[in-house]
Image (cartoon, rainbow, N blue to C red; front, side):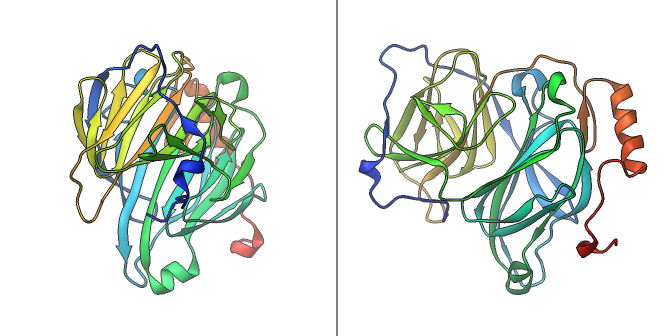
Length: 320
């Protein structure tokens, strides 16, 4: 996994375990289901579908793309499509992806980069493998997270953030056994670069075989841990967890994840996403790429899209 890994780990700021804390216990463990997205690529999806919406709130969807080794000509993406009412956050661990949207945002993200698109009032965009990836093939591994917007911000203007691989805050566990890439939100007094409308924390942690990560966690946030690779345990009861599984935690203000002492050759370390956010506790109406608060707003979104009111695909991409 070429997502940014520092060479001098012990020089990074340390995330110290809380001195007094109520550690969160695991309340549900979910194994991802496989679905087909975009132009026909497979993703693993822990939610929605297997998790009660209120437990994931403010998160709407988590898709795990890969890891997969594409042969030349195999790589596929998601052609032009609309969104309204939420944010898409695409974190790419391996490979390269090209994003273009009708608001003028876009660029290439690769190997540890994140593209953060606020759809807000409405936008068209595509996400496609780069020409080089299509031509030559190669390793591809990434995650897409959908973050809901509160009712008051559903109509906020669209926005695009390019968070390069050099921008996440790099942290370490107290003993140096784990490195944490903080993409957005706050963790142990440190701040990630992503600008969020909805209060969340989003991080990618690599935990060495046999090591443990314990960190404070906002008590008003929910807490989720998703395994990208490797095996380990979560919570005070050391519940086993493996690649493709999501742990949902109960209340508390501390979180523990540990890597098994023995890992595989293919995944020598435990790789996890740490996710948490302040629940919005608002009605959710969703249909495909639209997430609003009422059915009427969903119908309006469909009408606006069909009438071309969500933007225009740039002429460079075949419509002008």
